[in-house]
Length: 220
Image (cartoon, rainbow, N blue to C red; front, side):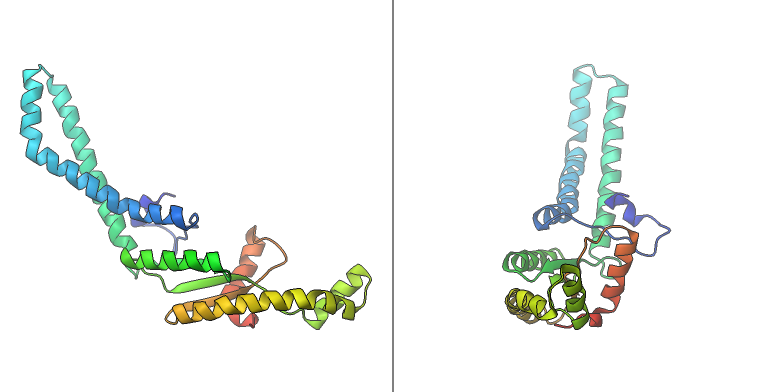
């Protein structure tokens, strides 16, 4: 499915585009506006200088088919301009389109998220949800027991090995979570735990979706 197809009637309730990193995404989102402006200039030039072009073609002995092909080209440009205008309108309609920002609780990721949110606001695009991924949490007693049995060591050994590293990571993440809460107090911020596996495949996506819908499973 292409971006231009989202404006056509579809059999889906919701369409999700998983976009590239921030820089690429911002260029993608600004592309319809750039194209709309460029096509508008071309159509205006055709209206202003169409007669001149036709006269020059006649002077140079251009055939009627050549002139007809020019008309076809401008007709296609006009159709493309109309389609891009419709996509632009849909992108900026909060009832139809919203942008969900995804980040981790680290400096560069938060910086890129703020850059994205500011640019979306400039372009009049809706964004109100931020998902913070890979948040660490203390090991539960059941998990400590599982790891102890797996590696043949005591639960206390597991606790002592993991505690310092996890606590250090939690403190760093807490600093950026506090900044996220301050910057985006009007947003719905969803906190997601660090998982033991990649989110790939239908089953993993289904499990991740359950956590998104019930974020209270994770406590910071």
